[in-house]
Length: 315
Image 1 (spheres, rainbow, N blue to C red):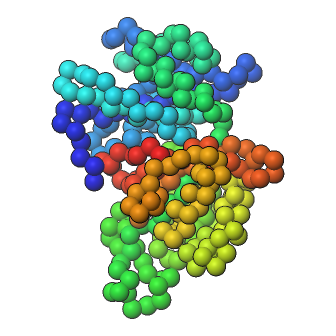
Image 2: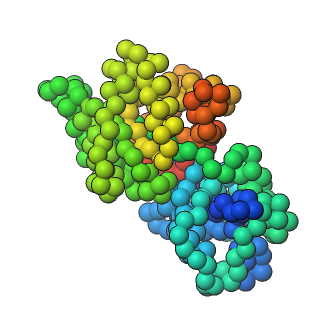
Image 3: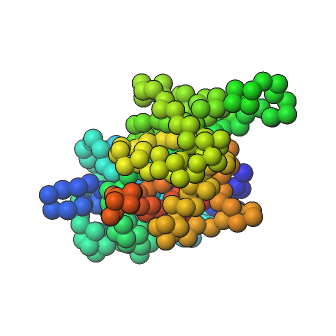
C-alpha cells in the first residue's frame, strides 16, 4: 500500500467536457474565495478513492453527473502545510445543471483555446493541453484481474471452482464501486468462479447477465492467443463501456500487445512484465477502428487496487 508523503494533501479533479454543435466545450469554474478560474477539484474525503472524489467534486461544484475516462495529468504544488497532489481525469458531462454554491459562483462552457486563456493557473492549462492530445470521445474498457481467492494448494476441488477469499470479496466490492464511475454497462468474465464472483455485484447493480468468455481465460488464451485478442477487440468495437474480468496469464500479454501496436510505451514491473495484481484494474481507452484493423489503444491507466488509499499509477 502506498504511504502518503509527509505533508501531502491528496486531491482529485476533472476536465468536464461535452459535445456541442460548435465542438467540444470545457467547464471552467470561478471560485470567489480565491477570485480565480480553474478546473473543478477538491480533497479526498476519508475512505474515498481518487475516481470517487473526482465525480463527487464535479457534482458539488458544477451540478453535473459525470462519466470518467482516461487520466490526464497529476499536478503537484506547494501549499501552506506541505504539498498538494491533484490527479485530473477526463470526464464526460451527463445530466445536471449549474447553480451557484458555496465554492463556485459561476461556470462557463468554453472551447479548449478559450479555456486556456481564461484559466488562472498554468497547471490547469497543462491539463487542458493533455486533454486535446486525443479525441474527446474515446471507448473505455475496464480490464480487471480477478480478486484474491483461497490458496490453490489448500483447495481440494477443481481449480476453476476455487472461490474468493474474504480479502477477495473486499476487493470485489471495490471494483463494484469503481465500475459506475466509468459508466460500465456490459460485463464479461472468464469462466472460473473467482472471475465471475469478482463481477457479481456489478451485474446485480446493472441488471444484466455476465457474458462468459472462455477465450479470455488462461486456458483458452494460452491455447489460442490470437482468438482471445480478437474477442477483446470485438467487445471494444461493440461500443458502450464494457468490463472484462480475466486472469494474470492473459492481461499483461493483451495490454502489452495493444500498447505495442499503438506505439504506446508502458512502464513495466518485475521482470519487465506489466503490472497485474489481483483485484487490479486497467482502464483502457480506444480510438475508433482504423483501416479495418480494430480499435486502436489511445491510453492505458493502471489501478493497483480499486480500494481506498493507494494512488492509481499513470501508465
